[in-house]
Image (cartoon, rainbow, N blue to C red; front, side, top):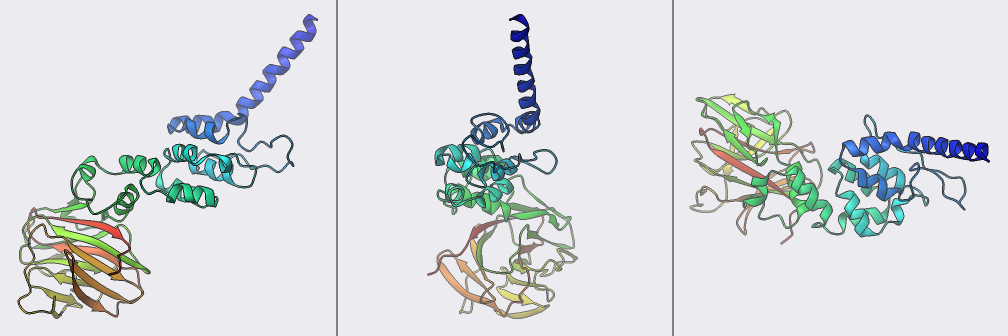
Length: 337
């Protein structure tokens, strides 16, 4: 009897070791990332994530690789694929809790798994998923000030941050402040300095807001540019619109600029009002109609440029005044009317 009990104990220990061998790697990586609830939620019965269930055909989902290049999103995709995935049967509230641990790139992968997961992610733009991601991604200053006051949801705020000024695509004489949306130009003499956003557009309709929070100087231009347009030059000039790679509106003298030439005044009315510091200008890029238009407040000022090329165009600004600041916030698809 003693030998029988010893054999059973040895067999149980072997089974436990095998189970730990299968799951320890994924469990370790998830715990390092602070995402242990993900593995437990997607695999509530324990064991390997892809282990077949009793009473089913031997169709399995491979256990996800969470080391190098993998992530919690891979675990979600693996668990949700096929009818055997435990994640596909989880209630929306549980999925929402699980998704709140993931980063944006992982959420994009999860949205492609099935309709249930897509609806869970995109059905409520103020859900815990987007609130949590917003809190992790955006600076506290951006969330507690009125910078993002025209964005109605947490998801819209996350999207705006993805489309903000690029710290790697601007003049060496400017830097992006900690809020992630405001450009500060250092007081460098005889230099015009600009910045582009992280993401450009080659299709669709897009709107963003721009406003100056300091003196304009002799030149202050807002508009669009290709990736080839320069973001710094000597002297005080209208950098946006100085070549065929950019289009700009100089807020100082109300001139439209492209290819080094003035394309007329804007808006086209008598005694057009001058720009006031802090006033938000809405820029509307329509890549289908190939036009660039502007709004001030609730007033549509008109189309400034037509016949834009079918290339990737980036929101951009250029400034000359020392210590001036410019803020740009992406709004998404413009509302008609």
